[in-house]
Length: 376
Image 1 (cartoon, helix red, strand yellow):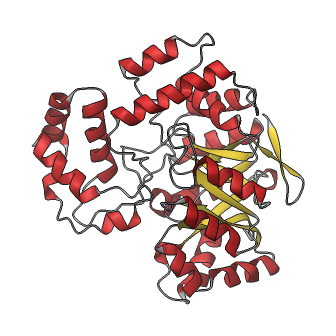
Image 2: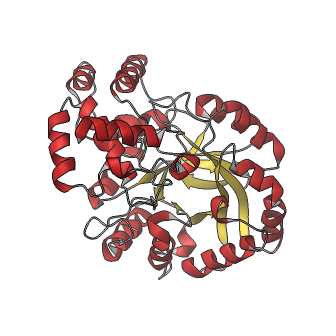
């Protein structure tokens, strides 16, 4: 496993971080984690050099923290930096803040969180951070030894807001979305370089865009990859693209299978900064342009929009809408939706509660109406 230095402490952090947002589940139910398989995967990753693990309060309906806590028993806690996130969206009053933090410590069954982030900072939640004086709370917990390093994850719509957040407080690190399709989305490459210029180490999330860059390849994408002399898997190309930036501290991959864990460890045990050739970088840029032309909506299936008040599987329906266009199969998607999906997209009441939570700022109500017209 390759490692990079955490400038705040001099610690070496694995280039691959284990993200616990997409753990294997039972019966296709997001909240029902396959605990045995998840523990096996997490411990395998740690045994093979991964020393950064990441979860959040709402992942898998709150069960991710619990399962990760179990995986870190038997001596594994001492081998990793544990990252968790404070859910700004659930903090309605000042009293909610310590209550939620204490609940997280209890779920994880630990007495300290190494890397603690304000979760999902965007245009709306940034005001909550200031109104509730969350930095004062983070400073207090850091002084008490209950957290070691304070950071934030960014899902805002502009680089300007990201710059404002970086400049507002003495952060120990931050986390941004970055993959070869999203070089100008949210903070983007510009944000990566700005944070590092200010002495703030950067953790990358969504390097595979929620797995979208590794799924079945459209024919136009396949033609580009066939033209590259060095043959790699889609996951390898995407991970190596992120690793190519020397500014990246570590990248989180939400692994759902043991095979994904093995592949990611293999790739990032070999990948490093400035290793990609100009030819490969050029082809990746062309692939990104092609994907962005094909995909109507840039959903990462982060599930921040869930649960839906009327029970819609919003990420699933957006994925099917995208697939109908990318893979040119609207008839097949229509058949699948009408045969197996309930509630149907026409059930959407356009309350737009989901849109307020969407890090990608997607017009979800419009997408549901469009899907209903297209597939029903």
